[in-house]
Image (cartoon, rainbow, N blue to C red):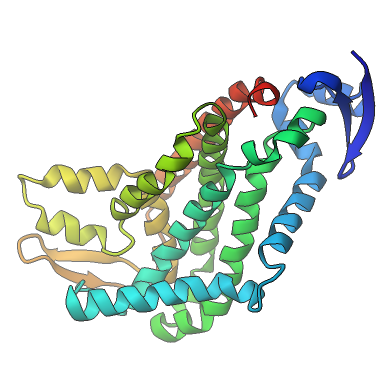
Length: 317
């Protein structure tokens, strides 16, 4: 079986007949990677390819769009307007500045959902490329994560004047909290995205279940409501619901980002469920450690599943 050397985005690859995953052309860079004995080093070497894929995702998405990158802001703004009317006029959520409360959590959720929604098709949708050339397969789902990260940062930049107007200069003073939340969320989302991308190759029904999974996950995450409200109103009989929401990993990233952009929401009375909100502040070290634990654990788990599945991608796509 003959191999033909090629290059993809500056990454040396080999084309191998028969659709079998090829190995890179032996060379000094490959020997260095083997000595490091880790796929993460190989992934780092493919950062230029990853950058090109991210650019491609952004260009394709907005190629024929009149508003272009403004959609990064318009979608959360429209969702905020709709939910603000519903949950301040019809079914009232007792928090101050509900639009800011909602958008500070929804931006996190939108990043997570859109990243995974793009990543789940990333391997199946690039079947011909995977059959022909070798490159770190991880760059395909990760390109969707990083393109959505750009959307998230742009949305925050555009919405920052409104956030500062509503919640004060504390939004700027506690910017490190927001950036820390985004960094940990990116690591967590990368693991989830790789898991969806890898498993979907063998279990194609997963892409059909995706909408249901994330719909349930959305309502199990305190985006529309504060966690303190659930804890105060459930009572002893349904306390397990509050506990289930509390152990939901997405909860910790939403709460961490909300601390920097909105502030805290606590229950002043467990029986009356009187909510008291505070200005943007610093998160508790325990919350940061839990979010860090979820981020690292999910990244390692998702990466392990993806690498195990990657051995047969060329045969299954």
